[in-house]
Image (cartoon, rainbow, N blue to C red; front, side, top):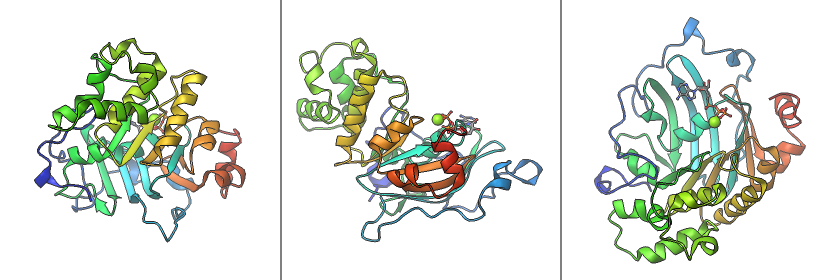
Length: 311
Ligand SMILES: Nc1ncnc2c1ncn2[C@@H]1O[C@H](COP(=O)(O)OP(=O)(O)OP(=O)(O)O)[C@@H](O)[C@H]1O
Ligand SMILES: [Mg+2]
């Protein structure tokens, strides 16, 4: 269960400023705000061409989804960026989000830990459940949500501090009273960085290579003990060797975490993910086990995209 406001006083959010109540323009599943206006009474061209009923995500009846997304809509002003997404994300799996630039992958990712509500002029409708709990409910604290659902960004963004301080930052803000040395070692081991930095923990994180910095950012996210880790193109700025290290790390992490990763790299999606969701113009076109989506896609549009005929 996600903690609520009662227990949230000490919560940090990785990479985020201390938070505030949701701005008024954010409508949630728990209120009845009207839908944002759409220009000309319609959202955008995707509505004309998209399927009338949303595709069902595959479900394993034996397993409750870690994340359950129901009829999720998101607007930047009048731009209807997400148009009714339904999706179940299974625990201890890697789920890849793919689709052409601007289709809404990052927007969807940010809806999963309430980061979008930090952007002015936006509106959301729909429901996002983590372990069955509505993360947009009025008694759910957004800072706690972002701690339980951590995020790793495209560009490594270590703080200008030591490697050690980067990892302990969230825990220290949180008043962590455990063994910080142990926390640092555990987090760096989980991020597959420990052996490379264990003798230089008190040197600047900015002296690490790009791939090491990205794994440090993964370690920093893990140090606040999230359940879910969101990654937005975490390897797109890295060379092939650093990329394969980050991919190995992700594959290891799924034993303990649920991972949702945005990638433009089809090979990467097929190497590391269990499920893949293909988005197009703000809609979920198809979500299936990765092997199936790449080799036997159900939808023509998915096939065209994965075979490189458009995108
Ligand atoms: N901060 C923002 N303010 C206004 N509009 C935004 C913002 N972020 C995204 N958008 C718009 O929302 C739509 C979806 O963008 P999003 O960044 O989610 O796409 P994406 O699939 O992640 O693309 P890419 O692969 O290029 O990263 C686009 O039309 C984009 O212009
Ligand atoms: Mg993006």
